[in-house]
Length: 167
View 1 (cartoon, helix red, strand yellow):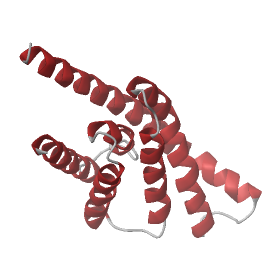
View 2 (cartoon, helix red, strand yellow):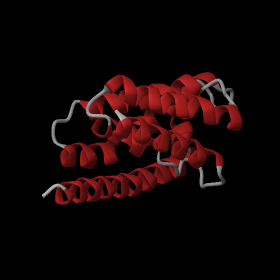
View 3 (spheres, rainbow, N blue to C red):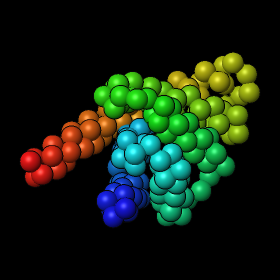
């Protein structure tokens, strides 16, 4: 129980800080954490969702809330649920590190197109919204792959070091 609590607090603080400090747009460990949280918390889905949403809410208190927030939080929950369904960690990280930024990109930008006055409510406006968001997608993809790799390697090092201590 202590380990779960420590992991939760560490990730919670890390996620909040990573969103508050200056960084390139959409270059945070949020998606990577959503992918790996089910593994970290032994498939305790509620704990993974609670971690991500609470960290988002707290950091949004500092950053600011917006009318597209539901289109930001829903893909995160969906990513956690999808990642939780994989039985092999290596497979889930590989598949999810590539697909999660796309899921987030499609859902969040749909919200921007549907709820904003920036784009016309036709096919041209829809395509323009997604086209102009491509740089954000690139940042999300890069950060998700990078942070997923770092998290996975760190997790494996910790597991290996714990096994050797008890041998």
